[in-house]
Length: 130
Image 1 (tube, rainbow, N blue to C red):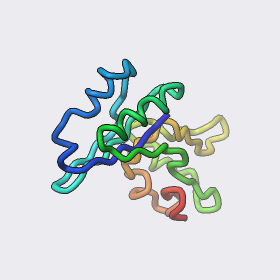
Image 2: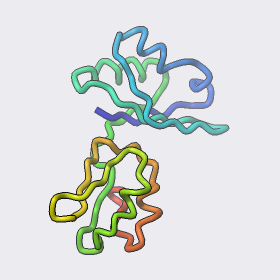
Image 3: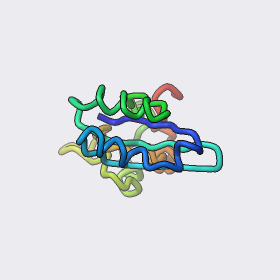
C-alpha cells in the first residue's frame, strides 16, 4: 500500500522513517521524497496489513499520512497509443498489450509526473484533475 507522508521542516530533521521501521519492524520502501525549506513529503510503500500500525506511528511522530489510491488517469478517447509514456516512465507503469494498446499498472507509479508532461495528446492526468 502506498502512503503519502507530509511532515514539517522540524520533523524532517529527524529520521522519522527509520524510527518507524525500528519501532514497528515494518520494512518501508521510500519511492519518492521531496523536502524543501518549509516541509517535506515522501511516498512510501508498505505491506497492506501494516497500514494502520505505520500510519499511527507516523502520526505520533508529527507526520500527516494519507493512503494513495488513485494515482493517474488515462483518457482513452485522447490516447493514440503512441508509447511516449512507455519510454519516459522510470517505473515501467506503461506497456503495450498483445493488440498494441496502451496498458497501465498504477501500483508501480511513484507520481513523478513525467508521463503527464510528455503525453502529446494530454491523455494522462492526475486523478481528480481531469
